[in-house]
Length: 116
Image 1 (cartoon, rainbow, N blue to C red):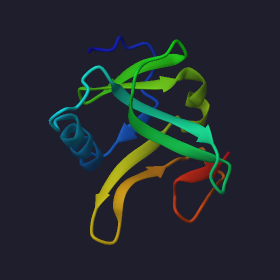
Image 2 (tube, rainbow, N blue to C red):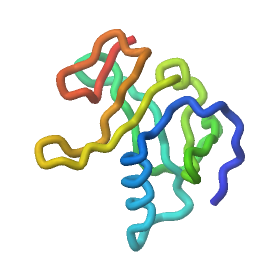
Image 3 (cartoon, rainbow, N blue to C red):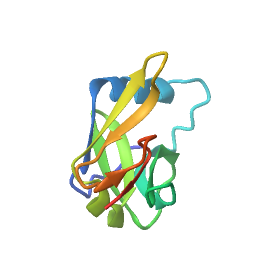
């Protein structure tokens, strides 16, 4: 499913994050009707938690694309995420997606929640 681009690209992904997302999208049984959702939700020790996963589009979403990866994000989340960089760490001691958000005034020790 190709998304219609209707918002400016709010975030960036490192080459390792793009490679991992594309790997996940190529796993047998991947639901090709879902797009990569980037966003935030309330919770976590600092107030907000990042969302990064595959989901279906809602009427609140804007669409954008990064390196051929169709993405969605609730338009209202842009103020929290504009300029954020998503990276993938594949090491033994540190494995998973990490977030570098210039809008965060504080972050927790695990790096998955923040406050603005």
